[in-house]
Amino acid sequence: MEHKPKKEIRHRSAKKLFEIIISELEIDDNLSDRTIMITDNMALLEQLKQQHIEDIKDRGVVELFRNGTQEIYRQNKSVDAVIKIIEHQRKLQAELKLTPASDRKVSGVVSPEGGESSDAFTTF
Image 1: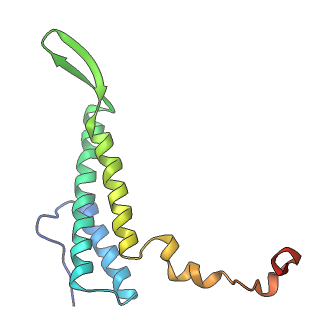
Image 2 (image 1 turned 90 degrees about the vertical axis):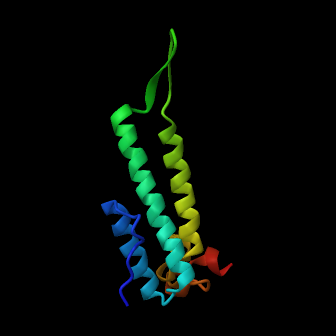
Image 3 (image 1 turned 120 degrees about the vertical axis):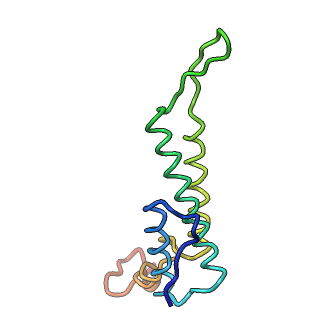
């Protein structure tokens, strides 16, 4: 079944992220209404992140703020917003078990017995 992002998701990178996550969830056979909703949220966050990054490119990391006769430089609020969005995306990735720590390939490589490459320290 073909899954499509919400109509509000228009940015190219957000749509690409949606497709990548859906394909990963299909591989793990973890596709449900709940995971599709989380994937939509991640794509919307990606779209917001891209908008903030464009704002940072336009206005810079600091911006000139004028209040009457006062002029000061202050941090562009988009910088903090991007950092918060990235943290939230990581939390959603962990919930979908798409982080490296939950990766099925990584957990299969580590052998607690040591296998053929065990040394004296691991057998101790």
